[in-house]
Image 1 (spheres, one colour):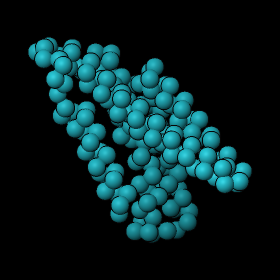
Image 2: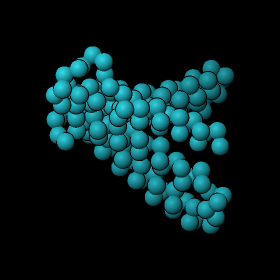
Image 3: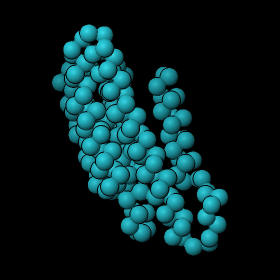
Length: 153
């Protein structure tokens, strides 16, 4: 239950950061300044979420390997993938958003197949079905940033 509360707080914070927050530096009535500011904020929020995911895996890798367990190396490939997504999101946010949303669809299909094969009831498997939702907000933020950087509505 605590994870859901943290996720709701993060989602509300991102909503405020991207959609509600009005920059005090740009007071121009034109839409270009506002669009550029919204793209910048969306990109920063998406990069922060992606960086938190990479840091999560790196903490486990370093912690396990510092404790003498070589199995901690298994956490490095996901950290590298998230590092590549950080770079892609910085240079081409629209492409990073598409990759993350496609990844969410693949995770969703894998979760549904896992639940169906294992014969687990939905009430017992809600956590497995929540996992595919993790990349969705980040992908949407990257798409929003890419759209606003290109000047599209």
